[in-house]
Amino acid sequence: MIALLEGVRIALSAIWSQKLRSALTLLCVIIAILSIIAVVSVLDGMDQYVRDEVAGAGANVFTLRRVDELKVLTDFQAFLDSLGNPRITLADYKALHEELTLAEFVDPLRRLNGTLEAVDSGRSLKNVEIQGRGGEYPGIEDIDLAAGSHLSQGDVDQRREVIVLGDEVATTLFPDVDPIGQKVRLDSRHYEVIGVFAKRANVLGQNRNVFGVVPLPTLFSQYGQFSSINVLVKARSLGEFGAALEEARTLMRVRHGLRPDREDDFNLTTAEQFLTFWEKISSGIFATLIGVVSITLVVGGIIIMNVMLVSVTERTREIGVRKALGAKRGNILFQFLVESVTLTSAGGVVGIVLGFSVAFLVGAFTPFPYAVKPWSIVAALAIVFAVGVFFGLYPASRAAKLQPVEALRRE
Image: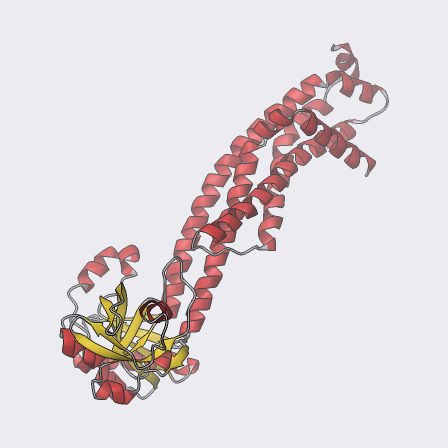
């Protein structure tokens, strides 16, 4: 224990007396540990966020769509092939709504961007996401109201010109009055505001409060059905999710007249697929990080080994004196190993502090969340310990092999 403390004291004394040299020596180790901590913290934060969002959307929800956009990155040829798929129509939604026996809620979705203008005040807001929906979207999505009411099935069936506004749209168009009952203009058509959604947190920099929801048939009567829609389906229970998915697939294949040997000309996407896609991205980023960090640590380790070899040369006479006073080879080996590990551990501690600082700044000034994971600290300390032992072993062994008589001759 005394030898351990003595080795740590000598190493810290050397670091403090040669601050610039020590900083340059440990620069690669600091950068490597900083990178590990910062990237792992941001990735873990994003991973938790993605899982929370998927859980909020419902684990037993799947979406029927014409094209699976995720295949742009995973299977580009399949994505190109899917562009020839037929449109998902309002008739497809109605068939699913009427014939699915294992679904609790079925709701259509069509998005477009437009400009909303308050009829009385003339205030306007551009690039508002207009969502055409049915009457069952509150049962599928976790989306609360701040005032008023959601669209009803009667609003949808009767093609009423009503709208529910996102929080930022309502506060921009009607800053001084109650939005409920007011009129907004979407192109040439007037819509009555019947509700305002509660404010929602941003997602990776995307403002989720600049939108409005109108009955899908009303939207189609205004713009026509020239584009495909999506259909969101919530199974009655998680246990029936797989069966509900297959029921929807079978129904759509029958509607599209597909023979058994032909592939689906539509896509059914689930939260699990999105999580799998995200896991591939995050694991790819982490694998790349490991490669870069490994190279950086090897370079840093070689520099540390060279510094330790210089230290052995500078302290040859000291080693000879210690051996002459009875120090064994094991004592000398242990001392220099402790110094090497202390040196790398000092760089590791600095890297950990800087890594969390960088992750905090990323979370504060960018849309990316971060999370502090204790295992990343343990992993970083284990890495720097291993680097210190591996690259300090040769210099320590060389010091331990010095003969006392030869060492004492050195000046």
